[in-house]
Image 1 (tube, rainbow, N blue to C red):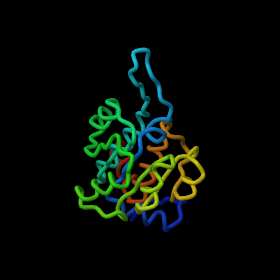
Image 2 (cartoon, helix red, strand yellow):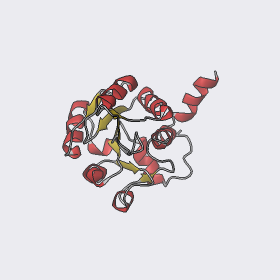
Image 3 (cartoon, rainbow, N blue to C red):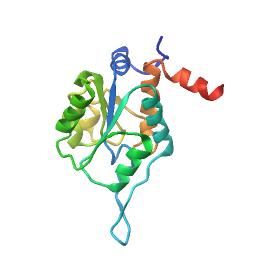
Length: 182
């Protein structure tokens, strides 16, 4: 029996329960969207550690994970490695084509995939996947097409919030918490 997800419509909970792959944009989702450059021209990004643990929990629950971003950054590659995310596509303007490549390699269908994005470039993917999520400060056109808008902001716990919602819909959250209490 799935954990209770009282604030979600049954249709959304059903979409979540069927997920086999969850993909994420980076800037504005895993980070707060701001770009920081050091004097030497290097790029700095801040990631939320709890978001990272949420992603690890999704992976432990059997979901495939992916990052699809239009920018390129060695920092993103490093973060993907740290989290055990094998599908890390960077410099991808056509995110839908990128997702379709991941779907082929993981033998998943679009309706078994979810995506969390925050800007207009993400709309083609958000419109095709079985589950679409975004953050509260995304443009209205993105929020209007999402099945779920997190309460928390990108880079500030939005990913962790979504991970726990997915785990609850799959009946995995309570057992995962119980493991920490044992």
